[in-house]
Each structure stands twice: as structure tokens, then as C-alpha cells.
View: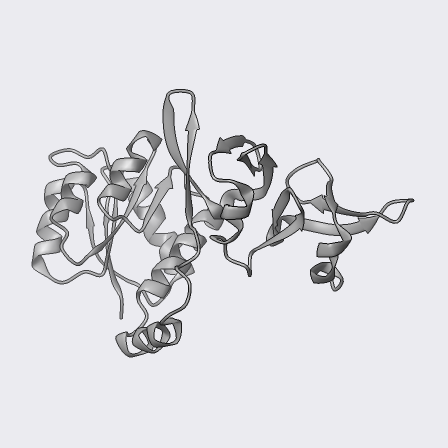
Length: 243
């Protein structure tokens, strides 16, 4: 049975996380709930723990300091502050959740942890099947906002749009420019989640609400969380005929 530690100096938030994890992953055993960094390290030293959900700003020691001595325990940071994202991933964190964490975002994290918790025999079989294949699909994008750099998970992306030599990353509420050309980005994305719909557009399949034809017979892609309508080239339309 996979085990987890929760460390947060806000008791109500810790209790809420325990409750949500119990519903999303009943098989996960919460073996300790720590109120500060020192308690978290004591819990990690007391027994082997698979996953640690760490707040970053805690009394005594920060979550980043706890992560440095976590050993084989995989770390997930949960914080209200996004400025620690790069430092968090430098410490090999699995995920970085911003408070307040939505059920949908926590469910994405749990799905990732469940893959991490696969039995070794199953994981070895998967690795054997993947031997010689392409690198894992891209999960995170580094974007700049003024003088700030932060990470955007690909699950947040609605579509990518070519912008001269660069690419616009469009989420439900934001648009960011990255330096990777669209054609290079396409080879790094999960083909089960993203599809090219036009020479200059890649769309997230879960973000597609419907495909329609206009009066001239042109295909148009309507989205769940954005009002713009995207063109679908006939050369890419085959994948969408069953939608």
C-alpha cells in the first residue's frame, strides 16, 4: 500500500487535503500529518514514506529544506506562492500545486502519483516496451511574465498557435509566448492529448467542445473555455470525424 506524509502549518488545510486524498485515492495511507518542517523530517526518519505533500513556508524548516533530506520519498509541493516553482523542480519534485487546489488539479496530481506507485514488476515491463522509443511527452512549459518566470503544465493549455518563429501558449485565461517553434513542439507533445488542426495550430483534445462546418463548408473548432473559433484544415480533419 502506498504511503504519504502531509506537512502544512495550517491545520484546516491539512485536514482538507487528507479528506480529498481519501476520496481520490482510497488506497493511499496517510501515515503522518506534520505541522512544521521539523515534524516532517521526524516522520520521514521514523519509517519509509512513498510521497510527501509539503507546504513551502513552514516554521522551523521550509518545505524546500525538508525535500533536501527526503531521500527516496517523492515530493509534491503545495503552496500559495508561485515564486518557488523553479526551486521546487530543481529539487526533483513530482508536482507543484498552488493553493487553493481545485479537485480537478489534485486529481491530475493523484493520477501522476498512481503511475509512480506502480509495482516494480509492472514498471519494468512498461520500460521494456518503451525501450528504444521516443522520450516521454512534454509535461511542463517555462513561460515568462515580465521579469518573472513560471511553469505552466500542459494540462492547462487549450491550444498552441504559431507566432512567426515562436509559439503562443493559450490557457483558459492567459496567453504566453515561448521560443520553441510549433513544428518542434509538436514532436514533444502527447499525441493522445494534442492534435494539429492547422499548419499553425495545435489543440488540446479535451478542450474541444465540438466541430462544425460554416456556410462555406469550412470546418471550425469550438472550445470549452475560450470564445475564439479555430479553423480546422481538411488535411487534419480525419481525426475529428467521429467527434
